[in-house]
Image 1 (cartoon, rainbow, N blue to C red):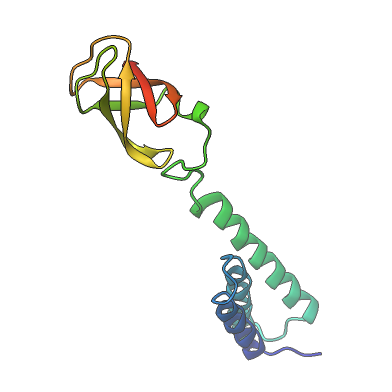
Image 2: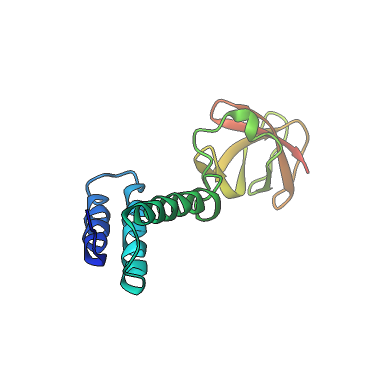
Length: 147
């Protein structure tokens, strides 16, 4: 079987369009691999079928690996779904004054557990604008201390 450069072009476009129906953001890399093989075939038209398939497989897997290692972020910015233990030690800025048996508010630079601002409590008197560290998550509020 002899595949021409335009066969790879059509395969690449079909796979990229299939990505619209498959919500995994995975098929697109195989489509881009097909387009890359089409480009290589346009320049070097005498490649065997085995070489073409090896190029397509290698290019597709390299693009998938590149996506997972370089372009895909390692952490979610909101940290939704993380356990409360992962939040211990996060630094925030106190919005309202807080003291023993009083509740205040603390704001974090990036959202933790889905919220940017949390109701907080402290064992000591803390003033607004002070940097605080999370020492515990207790239901819908956090316990903080001076950082």
